[in-house]
Length: 373
Ligand SMILES: Cc1ncc(COP(=O)(O)O)c(C=O)c1O
Image (cartoon, rainbow, N blue to C red):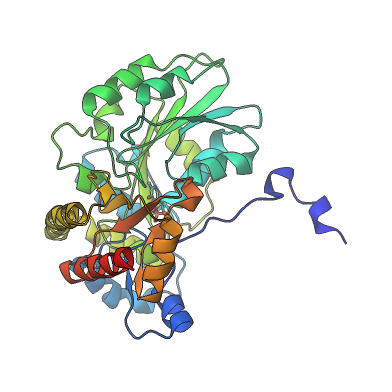
């Protein structure tokens, strides 16, 4: 039987997403005792202590299905963000949110505008639905060019993805830029503005910047706006797979109808409800990242490495003389996992997650050793 002849056309030749390597995989492969991972923008301080406590207290409940509506988690989010539950949805990670939105809105005849050097899962979701990605260049300084994004929207544009701050560049767009962008979006053939899917996975880090826009402030006046955030980054719950979004209640209603039942697992719901109240954990994580980002900038400058200024918990850097893949491979053998950017078509660049001080120091040591070799 020829399986290829029966699968959907859009799945044929589909390339899998390459995720950051895991510590155990690298320990096994290179026979290493100690390995540090600075590859997937997790929180090096670990999970919120409040979340860990409720996880311990609730292990024995896992034989139950979770609450399919994530009732308690939505209540916690509603309280935290002062928004009605009807405007909130939850999912198994931002990755699932991207697919839920794609399944809900994207038809094969639709165009979806995305930016070059933005999170790869957007283009993949568009491809999966058989729609067309319209890719817009970034500005020279690796920022989203929101004006160009609005200009690229035409009659067939169903949606636009915006990441703020962006992964892998760590750059952000200001309140002013974002407001103008929302106003500038033209009407499509349905007589409405394209759906703006605003990915704020690194919101808590960027929110320290005065002119960084909080997507939730724009919801009331923009029924085409969907904002989402995750528990994988600052809250340190990446392993549990849980994220949340905000939108107009009609959109939320459709997401609720089309998502899989029980999509957020039982422990994830309990841990996330606790984590969202853990202000100390957020504050410590923000402080650590701000301090260590400065340390890394200074070290990069000392060794002549170019970097992009970031407002998130990772930095994109370029060593001029070497291919990113070579730096990545060499550091991997030395027990430091970072991320080359070949998939993003940035072959000279590498992304490093900001870790604990001792991890960042070790990374710099290994990088210096490589650059000298
Ligand atoms: C910009 C951005 N959006 C979404 C995600 C997905 O996060 P998760 O599925 O862990 O919530 C990531 C993960 O790296 C990301 O960097």
